Length: 416
Image (cartoon, rainbow, N blue to C red; front, side, top):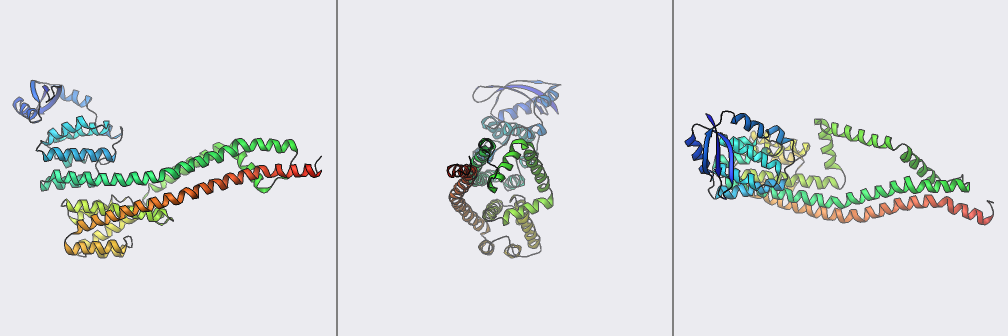
């Protein structure tokens, strides 16, 4: 197979140059015309392959540059499905998507996918080169769409799934933004009062000769001295703790312990559990409606719930189903799935509408997550404000108590 260098124009008249491999010039010209290009010149290029390899970023290089958001992937899938449904060839779809996407990283990846598809690879196979961008769920659905000849429908379902997942993620992020900002502000205020205002009061205490300080004031002075003179120890301790914690949760045992804590911690544990159930239901419904077999779908879902405890329960259920059990029984035994979920799954399996039942479960739990977030945000606001007021009030009272005592003693003549 020879390498050729070509010059062509697209439908808008834009001049496009590039290199491509083909059996002969006629096949290359026909391929370019299928992409909607008007070919002006085709010449053999002996060193084109080497130049192309140097000019085009490698998969590894692209994997470390920029990021691809869930919204970018959803738009990619939706536009891809629209063009496939309109009868546009796969290679031409990828060429158009490369020009339209706003993500630099995704643009480079689409270019690589296009080259792989042109060389004869399937779309699903080419996507597996970027597992961090296109996970098992993504590639599994695309593969199912290719096999069933319904790639456009599968991409539309995938786009809907990504949009719902992104919407839920944004709601969680938005609900947590206010409490986090309040905590940061409160921490900054407390540190400022302890490290800047309190030392000035200490100087006043020394000038007045006040020796007998209240216990709360002495504690604050110790904290102030530590933060002022040994701040590097605190920062070092925080950094070391963060590194040790990160290393621990990256181990299998550590990840399981942390995921267990996320499910059991007060208030937030129920929220995390509901998010995991919603993700499980939405993902499994999307896979089943796309024609993915139940065992393969459960294996894919186990890697998408982002919790090792629930993932293990799903894999245990998969093993039981492979032995001939109904899907509802092992889910109930795991203890990770509420009775309502188990019953609806069992009904869906009996009536042959499991994907629809799972979709309803996902809708219910996503609404539950939204309601929980709204209630949590409403409850956290006054709690944080009261806590901040209590801390600031404690600091102010501890600073002024010695002064009030000294003034009272001066007025009574005890100091003079």
